[in-house]
Image 1 (tube, rainbow, N blue to C red):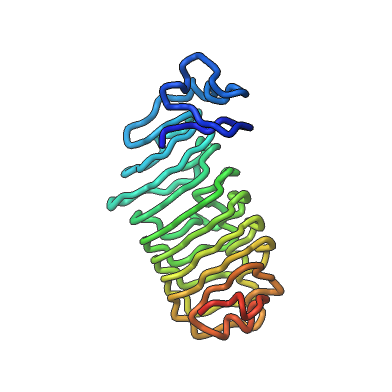
Image 2 (cartoon, rainbow, N blue to C red):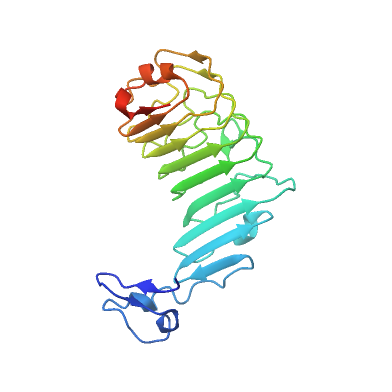
Length: 239
């Protein structure tokens, strides 16, 4: 811990050797990102990376010069979600929204909290009151690889809920209140590998819920009917 593995090398350098003005790595990567913005309270920063636990609105973090930013937003207070909320965090890589006041990703039919293109790779929404993803509300996080919406109030999955995130590999919607899987709910998830639908009171499943989608690795569900409709071998469908 605290050591940096040198690029194209089999050894690491100690923390005290990083940003000391001397190249200890063959490619000099131990001297990169040494002029990043100051580390904020509640954050851990190291060689171009910043990991933060924020208990209030993250708008004060705009335009931070870090190559990797991970935010854990945790608050019991009401938070105002705006379209430009994460606008300056162009290198926001992972975002965790837990126990916040978020109800929907879409603020209006044409506006979302991700109204500006984002490099976000992982989005986790947990223990919130969110009951609807909305339609095309994730289109600006087109680089998303992992989406987790767990222990929320999610009931509705509209056609177009996952529009624009065709690079998604992992989708976890467990521990929600989903009752109806509508036709083409998962359309567009061309690269999806794993879907988790466990612990949902699903009673109605439309025949074309997957719309020809192939889940390449695993489909987790408590309802065997989902396995029948999913384009996935029964060996890969887990109950």
